[in-house]
Image (cartoon, rainbow, N blue to C red; front, side, top):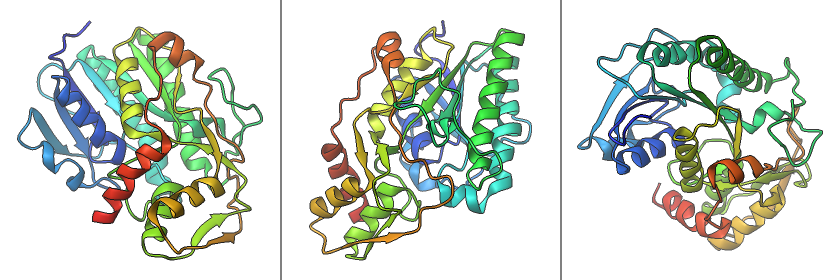
Length: 312
């Protein structure tokens, strides 16, 4: 087991989750090497880490990754992650899921490092099982517009498990459910940043469909704590990390309007193709094996997130 002073490589380090992950690792005494090609990442997310034990490398991880010296962990977080991004960047999304995962796994294998893959609840597609357990195989349209992201992550999981079985690599898979918090992009396209941006400008709040589709929102600090627990555990099976509190898209929009004191009204637009109707993690595995429990209530997390967006 690597010591607390371990050296951690994080791909996608300048992204929303990646940057919080780097900060958390530094706070827990690790040395961090962050890699990002800045396709959807932002150096502003990691600017405050420059004077710490943090090295940033601008690099596209679909190409060979070279790191000098020992590496204890490789955390593969590089990927466009919002529908706007992967609809605009379908081929880079597929490449980072396939080639990027292959290169990150290759680095972990070469260094004898432990590997953690950022997977997603999207591997369950538009689920026919509710809530979603890790044993569920999913209901994904491979050629739909969301397929580029869903299938990239499903392939990444398959390759990670192959490296674990064939090469004996100590590999973990975290299936991340909807997460929100500071450092999300204003034009991210996901529900929380979109609703907050629209509410702060008193613009109409865009609801796709009738707003009855559900999501379960996890605050960023809860997610990162769960990832860290998985990273240090002996668990190799996929683990859902999320908050099982389920609510409709209309409810989250109304909550944000209320909390911002906005004059915005809700307007409806057609539901995008293959948009999941329900999304709720079964976190029994995370609770049992990792002692994971989300701590931050939605309203508490929204206060922090709204403050961040006000300043943006």
